[in-house]
Image 1 (cartoon, rainbow, N blue to C red):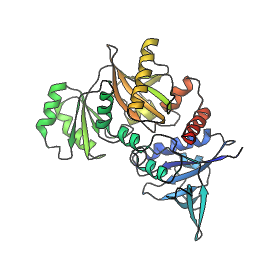
Image 2: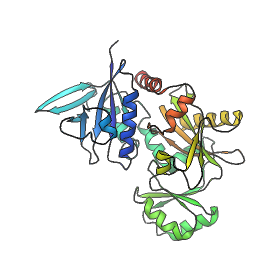
Image 3: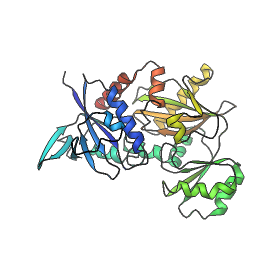
Image 4: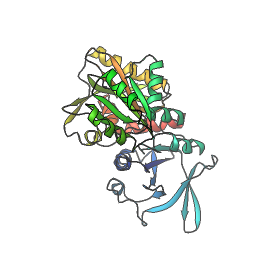
Length: 350
């Protein structure tokens, strides 16, 4: 059987550039090379595109960008070509691409932009499409759709960049009580997020959020703990084991996500079977309500009363050694190579 050329996009102009490199190395190392030929597309921090031909270990060490291993490249917008154009020695060479997987996290990676380029090129996209990617990245609109689907969401308000509307922010904090979370409207991996315990830190937290986006969200703190579901599929959905984040202090910020210094992740979550089943069904509802396809991770809160509250959907979750998505699928009996195979086959079948 002919191998399929699978383009793997990594890097990018995002604060999550280094996380993307780790995810890419893990994906490349687990891809079944008897079925798939990886076509590695690295995007530098400043936006230059290259076809990378070196050893995958160089990606994880961030020494991939060099003249020896890289050839300037662009994605052909011609849907009849369906491939990557290499610009080498004054010539243009087309490398056919049968499917494309982006492991670019954050801005330009999971907000619908790279997804639009891939879809316009006529290449099967391994992951959520343009609309779902953009919606899930936007915390306010994602919450509105979740609420419309009958799932509870935290109370919140959105501040524009002229956040000197102090009365609005203070009134919200008085209404829901401290602590509150201040977040960029569109950002991933907990960048720019602050748990604020009093008014003295509120304006500093809002200013930090605006370093990552031109809008910020003030959100009530939901008691309990965070649970997540790895969802795989388009119409017929597979859900991994529910996981649970145990925190000893603070919240699950960027450092904790990728180091687990003071927190633990339990898979399966330490909840009753009927609660786990309810979480999984809610994850399916949210996945479908926001138009997700192929794969995504659905994050929720479980309150002490047993209520489920939506947090967010991550359309390109991490694929590093600490990452939750492959861990939840593994706990459900789906090993990483099989998971990647199923993701690619779903995209090609679409």
